Amino acid sequence: MSKPASSAVERYRRDGFYFPVPVLAPGEALGLRRRLEAVEAEHGGRLSGEIRHKPHLLFTWLADLARHPAILDAVEDVLGPNLLVWSTSFFIKEARDAAYVSWHQDATYWGLSAPDVLTAWVAFTEATVENGAMRMVPGSHAEQLEHRDTFAPNNLLSRGQEIAVEVDEARGVDVLLRPGEMSLHHVRMVHGSPANRSDDRRIGFAIRYVPTYVRQIAGERDSAMLVRGVDAYRHFAPEYRRRPTWRRRRAPTTPRSWHSPRRSSIAGPGSSASASYFALSFRSSYGAE
Image (cartoon, rainbow, N blue to C red; front, top):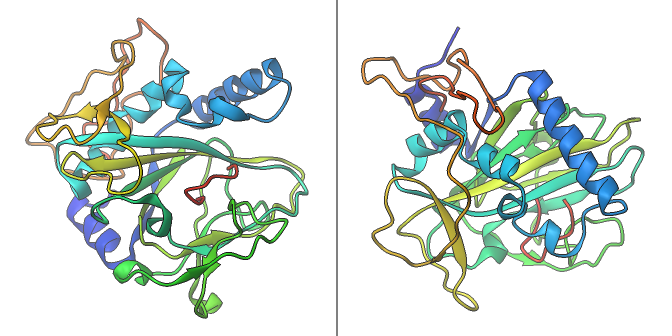
C-alpha cells in the first residue's frame, strides 16, 4: 500500500530520515554495480583521487541517476522545486572489513549557509545489519552537536570525527535497504554505521541535494549542478553534463506517493526512460554517510 507524500514528508521532518523509497529494479541496481566495478577494474582497484570527488561529473550513468525522477520528486517534496546536486560520492564497505563510521552529523563539516540539505543514499547492493547498514537516531537532527577528532584507524571519516556527547545507541534505527531502494536523511541527522561482517561488499551512492538559495560560507566558492527548476541565486558556479536521458512526467491529478509503482527506471542513451509520476565511502574531509 502506497503512502501519501504528505505522510512521508511528515515522518521525514519528525525523524530526520525516511526509507525505503524505491528507485530502481534490483536488476538495474546490479547493472550499476557492474558499471562501478568495471571502472574500478580499469583503474586498478578502489576509486581514488579525482574519481572519488563528484563522480557524477565523470560518468553519465551517475549523472542520470542523480536526475532520476523518483529521487528528484521525493527531494522536491522536502526542499522545494529548485534543486542543485552539490556533491556525490560512493560509500563502499568491503567484505569482512573492520572499517566503520562513528556517530556524526554531516552539517558539522560542510560549511553551508542553512541546514536545508538532503542526502539521497541509493543502494547498489543490499544494506543489512550484517554488512554495515547505516544507523540513525530519530529526531536527532533538531540541533547541532559538538564533535571531536579521534583519528581512529578503522574509522572511515577522515579524522575519525565523532559526536562529543553520549549517543543513546538503543535508539538507533537500522536503515535496511534492498538493491535499488534509497534512504533520505537530513544534514544534521546523527548517524553512523558498523563494520561489514558479510562475505560481500556493501555499496551505496550518496547524492547531496540543496535548494538554490543555500550558499557556501566556508572556503572558496563551490560548484553545483542544477537538476530541477531554476537557479535565480547563482551562489554556486554551474556544473554541466550532457543532455539528460530523463523526461519528467507528472500528472497533476495523480496522488503523490513516495511508494508509487515505477513506470520504468534507468536506461541507456536514446531510450525512452521515465519513472513513476511521483516517488517522495570512502574517506572524505566532509565526513561520510
